[in-house]
Image 1 (cartoon, one colour):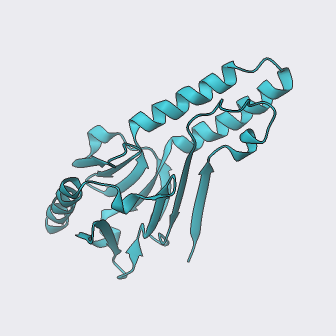
Image 2: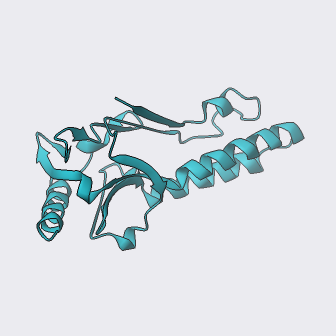
Amino acid sequence: MKTVTIGIALLALAASPAFSPGSVAHATSIHCSGMDPYVHWADRCDPTDARVTITTEDGDVTLLLTERDVVMQLSDRTLRKVQRELRDAEDDQDNVLASAIVTAVTATVRELLGHSFVCHVRDLRDVSYEDGRLVFTGRNGRTVFGHADVCDSDVTRAFSERDARSFVREFRRLKAGE
């Protein structure tokens, strides 16, 4: 099983003298495994294009359902917060070498932030809400987004029951219309 791990925790920067302690107050890490072969990395989705959008109770991650895809990405709020902190980190540098390193690393992180985990609706057999978590079943019968963690929190368990059930209802309506 392929595991994709994207560290946006800026560990390289944290170890660098370019950052003073506490200069990056918000660290975000995303880990998603159990997604091969259906989930891929793609550009962020505009929430206004979605049939339904739900956000985790802590506000960190948004799950969207469009006419074609199920999309998991950082929420707009979290994205703005991280971008602001990256900008602040760049602005706080007064050493030319440190500034160059910070600029290079933050540019890479910004590129990663502009993306999402995407699974085509056609590749999902069903989405259900079981034991307090969303369960995505691929057309091969295997779990998709089985281990989706953001900041060491299981995203599939991080939505309110009401929102999760709303997402399931809309997914099933969409699948019924295919």
